[in-house]
Image (cartoon, rainbow, N blue to C red; front, side, top):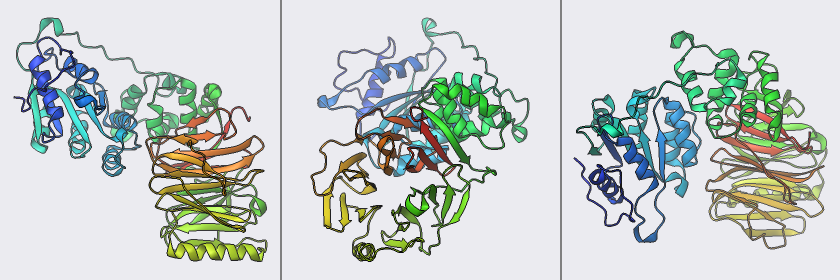
Length: 543
């Protein structure tokens, strides 16, 4: 029986006829801070379970006029655990490649409104992987900022399994089913040809995900799942992005960027033709397992160099190794000779070929280039290094005659030949900075507060952010290009945006996995690095 008491107000809205008492119990559970995080709605077929959750998603009280916690309806019928993971992650503003990553992301991400929600999960008994989903639900119920209402048919294994694993409120609609509420069972939707890239991009992405995960239609067991020429591997690599609402051209671009070099050679031109309508053109992509050229490894930091290193990309991994790649095709150009202990958290190529590195303790390191440095630049770098030894930095950028550093208190510091300029730009830690050496030099900064801000040292920061999201900024880069200054920003929810500070359309891209680093080349190409891939895109207008 329900353990919650009816709430004081319903805003004049009534639940489905015959379920008023259960609706009152659900709303009471929602408003009881001591109630379990998990509520099970059970009942026989046709007893009104799904209709009750539909009503709960749309209606309910707003105590004292305050904004209520979002209620997110997630149908589970026919879903795999992976498809549901991507759906929930996207709705809550995090990125997850697996159920375990979803639980970890929600448990460790900053407590923002987008990460607090009531999940309304319907038809668990009809899921493609009910046991795996039941396990995921049990883990999510242990995350403090999420509440779950789970609908499952009486007699299915899920309710008892969840009650044995977690404290739960139970709302039982058992009894005689309402004959008017009994709908005929849905016919299984026909699967697209899972080897046809055009059919896959136009189909229901969650249906495609379930088919790829479970091997539906392959005619083989799990040990012999058909990779469909490489489409399946690419889909599962970029799945959270692919499962978002978008047109087939955008989905084709994401899938093309995730396609390995060992894929069926007919797939790439077919996907490229379908992606013609997207806002980007894919110049190249290097994914885990690629051999020609070889995948450079997981990306932690990125840099696009000028001066003596013109046309070279700097790609750092978690171990501190920084690889040099040719910008044209990501082929190897060697490694950066440095001896930085620990991880490299930021890198900044200077115009004279020197590369500045920030380690995980917030300290500065300098790797000299092939061109002798001017003495005043050496003195500037030494002064910044001494400052960061006392006051660790969290972000780093460099332009001619200036080094820019962010700190954990939200301030940005521009060390230059004419002195030090500072701005309190963010609430919380500065996560990324970039500097542009143009007619009017400016600094970009991104923070844990989700904002990207512009600032010209010596002046007040612009009051309005260039961009803002309910998710921390994870990477930022800016440069002057033939198309004007461009700013690339990436957030922890998986979104990458390319901005034009002087005005113009903003372009966006989501690769699927969590984005670790972004950069813009001098020619205006966008680089996106993840643990799985390094992708180079060009705006369609530039090409």
